[in-house]
Image (cartoon, rainbow, N blue to C red):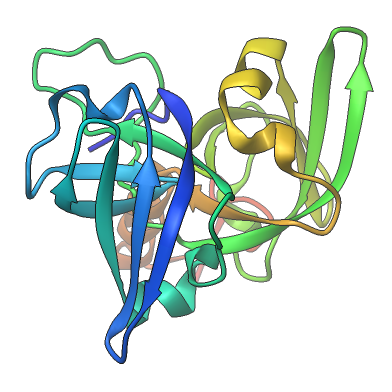
Length: 211
């Protein structure tokens, strides 16, 4: 499990393509401090397993499912990625529950500078609108964020300078893809409502109509 508090923006050092998938070598200073083989690391929101590692790098393997469902199948050497180690059992919980199971990819539709802060707007992919609510939690590229405003087909988040500096959001522009993981609590709520005979609506997971 992760919390969505990104430790650093690492960099793709090398990409190896095989018949089975892709292997990525990723450079990072913070997360490599106490790595071990088999550990989980969130790479821009995707939970991956460390296969090999060195003083300032580690390697992960992307199976075909990961290649098909995330944009990591398209990253190249030099691309920045957000990195977070799995949360220790006695660690501080500063973000929200993040599984590292990407639900879909979304597109950046606007980037606005607001005073010293920034506002990013993302398109809501079809079928995921019911999970996005005002002031609710959402994970974008592994970053725990709060929905500032929910529109009909998009949502916006406020980004402070510190977050923009230590994550790959500084490299994102309109048209770029990001990984989206909705709040797992919303998905559990949907399942419970479905089992209870209610039909969840696309507009809001908190609103349900009886069948």
